[in-house]
Each structure stands twice: as C-alpha cells, then as structure tokens.
Amino acid sequence: MFEKQGWHYLSLGLLLAGVTALASGEVLIGGLWGISTQTWLWIAIAIPIIHQIIVWLFWRLELHHGLITCWFGEKGFPIYKVVFTIFFAGRPVSLILVGLANYKTLALDPILAYLIAGLLILPFVYSMYSVVKYFGINRAYGIDHFDPSYRNKPFVKKGMFKYTDNAMYKFGFLILWAIALATLSKAGLVAAAFNHLYIWVHFYFTELPDIRRIYGEPAK
Image (cartoon, rainbow, N blue to C red; front, side, top):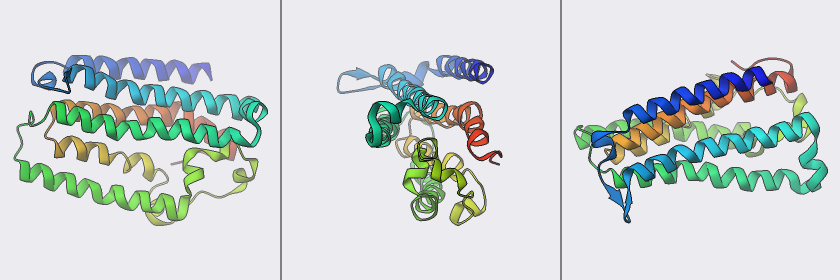
C-alpha cells in the first residue's frame, strides 16, 4: 500500500508542477466576483485532490479495517455518498467558474469550440446512461468497498461498458473538457487536464489495487 501511495504522491507532484508551469500569461487573465482567475484555477485543482484523498481514506478505513461501518453502522455508506457527491459536483462547478473568469482566452473559433464540446458531450451522456442503467449508481460510488454481497457480482459488459471496463474515467470526464471549450478558457483546459489525468492516478494507485483485493482480478 505504501509503495502505491509513493507513486501516487510522485504523480500528483508532477501534475502540480505541470499546472504551475502552465499557469501564467493568458491562462491567468480575468476574474469573477472580484476573485482572480488564478484563485479560481487553484480552487478547481484543490477540489479533485481533496475529493480523491477523502475517497482513499474512506475506502482504506472500510475495506481494510471495516471502521466506517463500525463507527456509523448502516449510515456509513450514505454519509460517504453525501461527502463524495459534494466534491464530485464541485469538479464541474469549479470548471464553470474558472471558465467564466478566464472567458475567451483560447484562440479558437467559437463555432469550432462549441462543435468539439458538443461531440465530447455525446460519449459522456452515453457513459452516464450506462452507469445508471447497467452499472448502478451505488456501485459507481464504490459500494463494493462496504457491502460484501457486491464482491460476487461480475464486471458489467453492457452499454459503454461493452467497449471498456472503465467508461466512467475514459468518457465521463469529457464533460470537463467540454466546459473548458464552451467557455473558450485556457485556464479551464488546464483544470480539465489536471482532473482527467489525476483520476487515472487514483485508478492505478488506489482503485485498481482495491479491485484486485475485492474481485481477485484486474480491470482492463
């Protein structure tokens, strides 16, 4: 576990270094409600970091030690879902605010930007539909870390999951890129890239080891 977390910290450090290197010039132009684009950008970076740390902590405490259920009983998973939802919703909301603060700094024809954004939304919508219809909302939250009965269920192979086991991360995060393009925001693109790359850090160094522990086989 510590070895995996070491790679997690290293990857996060490299991503933050990348954001710092890119966060200059037109990337930081503008502001919203008296708050600078730079501040909004770092808020949009902080939210996924806090979100993924919280998920890591809840999953470790429950999967390895059963402490969430021990402390809160049947309310443990609902409490986790509330906390998860707040930070999950904070990702697109913070992207919107960054985009509005840094509006029209991207030198791209608006019609083309809107067209690309619309195309990105299509696989996002189908992926979310597949999550709701086939995968299940609770399973997407990570109920298999809390409820042992889920650990005998097979991987879903319907909808978008017929083409990839990880539709949520591959296509679900395209909505953030769409927001950045729709607002023509350079800072928005930086925040979207960080979100999308960092969720893969979470997958490889937190979720994949958990999948192997729970199901005894890796996801593709």
